[in-house]
Length: 72
Image 1 (cartoon, rainbow, N blue to C red):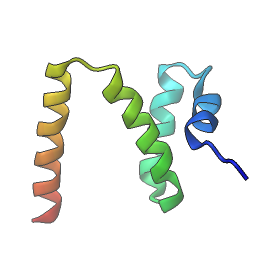
Image 2 (image 1 turned 60 degrees about the vertical axis):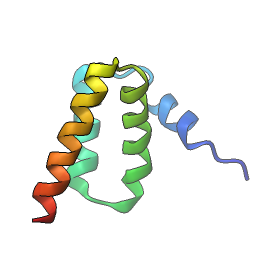
Image 3 (image 1 turned 30 degrees about the horizontal axis):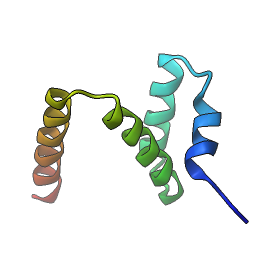
Image 4 (image 1 turned 90 degrees about the horizontal axis):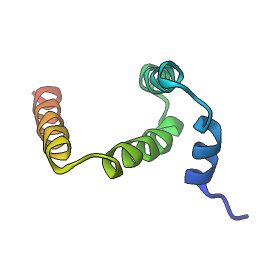
């Protein structure tokens, strides 16, 4: 069986507006289920690939801060 997670996620969100995309992200995070992690990864990949270098650096900085805060 050939399962392409990216294609499935793209198909599921292709017609979503900003509010629906935000709701999808919030639901996945609040739900906390492991099965949601690949979807969040695909969404992050989309964001990353459409960000400029300054935005990427800001994300990395936020990630570093979040990791340090969550681990302390």
